[in-house]
Length: 268
Image (cartoon, rainbow, N blue to C red; front, side):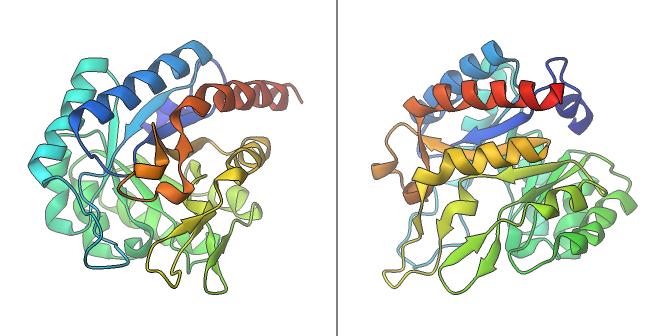
């Protein structure tokens, strides 16, 4: 599948986008349809993103999901209704086969990217595996995570850059790492998570959404294969990561400008 995403006739980047977590069917279908219509017009290959459950939470009372099976069925409905691939993250090796029944891409969370058992389990499903780069790893270290997937017999793999830990409450994206990691696999830049401000004193992750467009422009200009971003009709009421999400009504303008930028870069 990664070959299809990176070989778009339009020469565009591909996009993984959707809500942080599936909050219900209506919101998922709304976001998917809106994003699909925009990306189709712009020639951007699109994968709908939604977590069926959130495992890495700051506090025990943080929202984790509406139920695994219920959320996974919504992801499958998005896939079947709109004819688009879907991606979700898994949190343990035993979840890989279950999630693979509903989605096209299995995403490995950044904090789990070195866990051999979860990488191997995801690879064995035959689904595309998207490995998020650990906030604690160098770009070069990701070659070993990719190799674990390939050694299992699955070449359908990508790496997602989502920032490196910098001090206590911030992340920094080193754009030199994009080219470095492209030696091992296609590279996606996670725009919105790179703008998180984790571990705040309130126990709720903060963010810098006003920097979404500058970060996305830099990723496109440097030649990232794909972009990842989370979007919601109203981030202020999102049940997870609302502080760094893109408002859905801003998606069309952003993608239109980014698509034009990629076309200009391709002409250089």
